[in-house]
Length: 180
Image (cartoon, rainbow, N blue to C red):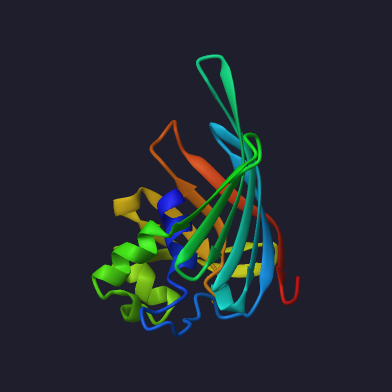
């Protein structure tokens, strides 16, 4: 799940500095609910067609009687990623590793649409769904052990990742396209 979530907004800027449209809508906000071994919420904001994002996550996971809280804010701005750990009151700025890897391989310009990315990840469409009144295509990404349902604007409305018994599902509970 983190690979797909981390990769998606990083493809926003091409190696030559030009912008790419990660999403087919300029800006919006999606709120998600986690279920499975990891529970909690995430609020995802994006602008400039996904070139700039903010992902605020508040989750907890129980394993062997222990509960681990995780609260973070991750901002992306083209090839840069900023991570704030609110519990430790620490922040880091780094080049986004997924962006750097694709840039080194000359792969950034290869993905003109969300469909190009999904196919490059080995994805296939396996069905359709509707979440919050929004239609979405279900993509199976076997190599990532992930299934996701994305709108025609390439926004994920739900994502399920992991192996049986350890699957985490992230489902949109609020969805807004337009100014936020």
